[in-house]
Length: 129
Image 1 (cartoon, helix red, strand yellow):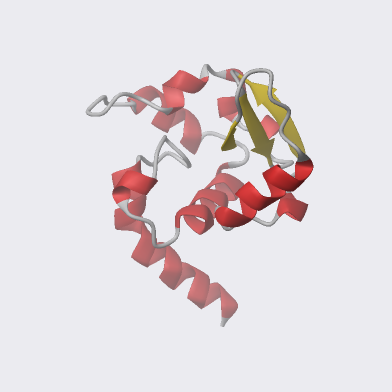
Image 2 (cartoon, helix red, strand yellow):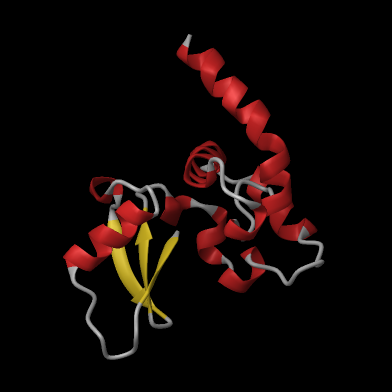
């Protein structure tokens, strides 16, 4: 999910949402659903509601620094949309610093995704060849 800052009582225009998504490197045409939750606009992909994470409290996927999220990581590896999630987060965060990454995605914490990134890039290059 991509969180878009929104102030309570403030309507976010589609133009603002599109501009924000482009700033994140997302294609607004690929966003399938947009909703407001906890004063944030949330853009989702079509596969996201099928994910195991959709039925679990979001705080579980954004643990405090130093926490060991073993349960949610295990849930990720059993998730029916694991491959889509992995592709989404690795593409979204490609080249970003650790402090620009957050949450558990595809069973990986931000530091895990940074370590995995070179291998993921090599895998993508192998598939394209």
